[in-house]
Length: 270
Ligand code: MLT
Image (cartoon, rainbow, N blue to C red; front, top):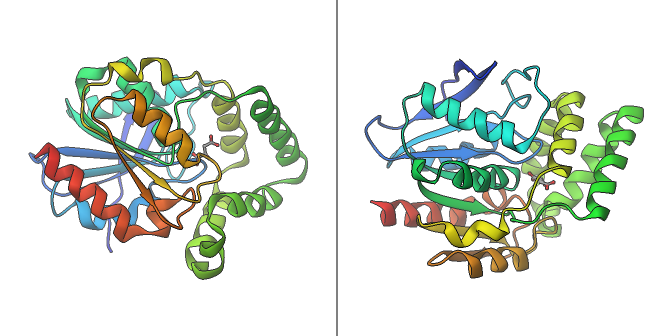
C-alpha cells in the first residue's frame, strides 16, 4: 500500500505522519507503541481510510519525527499530540493507542477530555511502573549504553510476540526487530526514562465518558489481559475484546480480528 508521508512543525519538533481518508469524516489518530513508529499501523490504515480520516504519526524521536530539545515525559508526548491536532485544525478525534500509545491516550483524556470522541486502548494499562519494573528499565538503559541495541532488540521481540507468532510470523517479527534496531539509542534510553517516571491513570478512569473499546492479546506478556479487565471494570460502558493467541502486538499478529473491532467501533461512533 502506498502511503504519503507528510510533515508538520509544532511544539519544537517536526512530526512525520500519514493522513489518509476523507477530510470531513470522523478522525481516528493511531498512536504507536515503544519503540516503534507509524509503520506498525499500515494494516489498520489500509482498512480505516475507507471509512474515516485516519492519521498515524511518529512520536518525538521515533520514526521520522525529530527528537527536540526537551526532556522526554509522557506529559510532553501528550502535549505534542494536542499541538499536532491544533496544527491540523482537528478539534476532536478518537485516539487509538497501543501500549505506550495507550498511556498517551489515557493522559490525553485526563488533560482535555472534550477533545476526544472515543478511545481504543490496545495492549495497554493504567498502572505506573512498580519499583521492580523501574529498576529493570534503568538496567536496560545501562546495558544499551554499554553494548548497543542488538541484545535489547532480540530480548524484546521474545516478550513482544506470542510464542506461536515468533514461529509462524517471521516477517512480522523481523520487521519489528529491524524497527527497534533503526530507532536511535538516545530515543530508546530517553523514552525508557519517561516510561519509568509516568504516573498512573487508573484513579481517573471512572471520569471517562466517551465510548471505549479495550483490545488485548490473550498471550500479551507485557500488559496481560488481567490489566485490561481492571480498566474495563473502571470505565463505565467500555467493551473488552481479547484476541486469542496474540501477544503484545495484537494488531500485527492478528490484523483481521483487530480490524474487525476497529470497524465495529467506527460504526458505534457513526
Ligand atoms: C510498548 O509496547 O509501548 C511498551 O512495551 C510499553 C512499556 O514498556 O511499558
